[in-house]
Length: 261
Length: 254
Image (tube, rainbow over all chains, first blue to last red; front, top):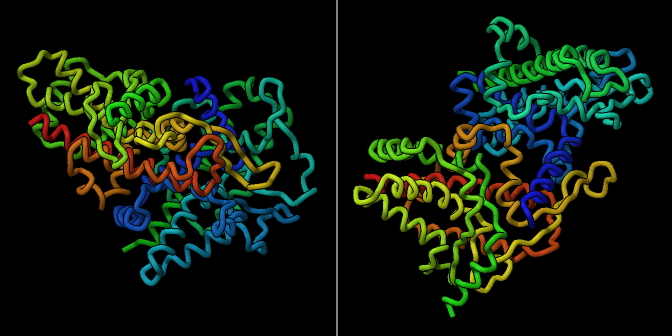
């Protein structure tokens, strides 16, 4: 098989993977890396002990295994739902914020849990916390906001709004590594980081719901993503970067809390 | 008979296999540098400075393979055999004072390029296993099986699978981060993997490649769990390459 065809196949693999993920692979890797950079030395050592991998290795694990037994039970844990009052639906216990809170509580007793359970719970958190900070992962009940069910365009062709925002972290950032993302974007003061880390899984989900509304203003129906002016791209990055950082910082807060001395 | 197999293995393999990506080659080198002795590091830096950088396109253009007999032993003396070329390059580095700078630099380049290839599953040609000696395509399935919207499938060649797929999942990692991840993951195995010679390592890779051919063939359908689980094999190969480059250079650059 010639090399050109092989390259096409790889691009096809990468492209098709995007549509079933939340933040795409790059976004999740960035969020996990940000979290790793904000771990205490004790927490980092504990994670290495339990995971036997870097933090970032497991960034997309939940997406990769979501349809495979027995991990398909976690398929509903990637998103948060809004109730009919535009508020986080706290009664829906199947969603990400609920399982984040549950696992956080469970892990506080990690010394009495089997290593395999600690490991699996960490893997879930690494994906789930940033995942529900993805603006398109706030789901509205069917029929609630029909005006928000629309597509974008890419060089004139229809493209799915959800797919675009999943990949928005890397939009027009070709060749960026996670280290570059951290260096250029993770520039907030410790005071700001602490402010965003305050609260719990439910409060963070409420914040994610509030922020999610911004995406519809930034990319109205029929926006052609190939023709967006710099200012609009900057608005997209402002929202996605804020949510990636919040997801990463808050993930670090949980892990640091679990493994505090 | 054995010589005939080796010739056939090369003829079959030429032009079909691919080299690892730059990210994987770089990551194995970063890992190697972590375990090189100060003396080997100093010599490495001196030789590498002769030209500045290693040309990774060079590896992709090489028509090379690891030929193993049915007992998974490397006995080849063929010039195109990866093990033979690594041995010759290491020998030249050991006797580097008798050679020109250009020859020494080329030998180091051979090792940096061919050690990863020694650990590339699709470069391992095993006598009596026809599928190990050719490239073929198979189908992979990912996503939600049976779902019109969420099931994903495609075809991929055997060599692309082992050289491009898994590192594509970590394309935003730097080589340093890749090496860091491998180092944590295989900390317990490192010492054992660093033992031995290129012939032993070829045998080790034969042991790892052979079971693949119990299922790997043209038009095979690979389900997602299998695809995901095989990353462990791939990671083990990259880590082995890195650790063993250190072993080889620590011995050759004393």
